[in-house]
Image (cartoon, rainbow, N blue to C red; front, side, top):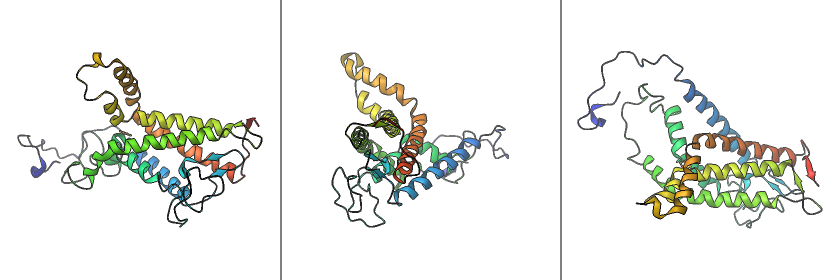
Length: 268
Ligand code: FES
């Protein structure tokens, strides 16, 4: 229940209802599945990032997005497209330049905020279900005040999507020259989905169509804004789809690099 101290001026207190919630549906299912899904993904990604192996297939130039760009001295030959200038200490991820920004981009994403506020912090876990905490200060104080930096992480994420696009193009390779296999299809799908998620960002929508008084005077921006808006209403789905494509792409590259499977080749 909202405390008197945090209740907006003039707002009335909630009705005195003894029951925790009057909802009888499975309101707890969405927060529960969110906790399970996000926790599983974070555990998988953490293990992979600190594994420091099976991220590059030299034969076909496949590089997993979790190691892109590979910038430490430990990076295996051929996998560093932008130089290897960081020390190869275990604690430093091989993609140390990009992973922090990607993490911050997702952490401050409007959708993920809703997801983890509800499911991990129970704040509140669902509509018409009481908050798990006595007080609520929103995003007005440190550290949650930092959520406002999301628009800047969007620019970083756009640059990283460009790097991932380069990785996907660079992977059209075989020992004889041009090549094309199932790994390319997976890398391409992943990069298309990453772009869709990045462009569907609320900050992107504002950058494209915000601060305009008359759409009629800016037909190109209006057209672009319409496209971004179409993606924007699918932002939650894209947030989950990209978690899936990232993990799948990484797993496939790992499986080929570790020689558990061989890549299915369409053009050698
Ligand atoms: Fe989700 Fe920007 S709002 S990435």
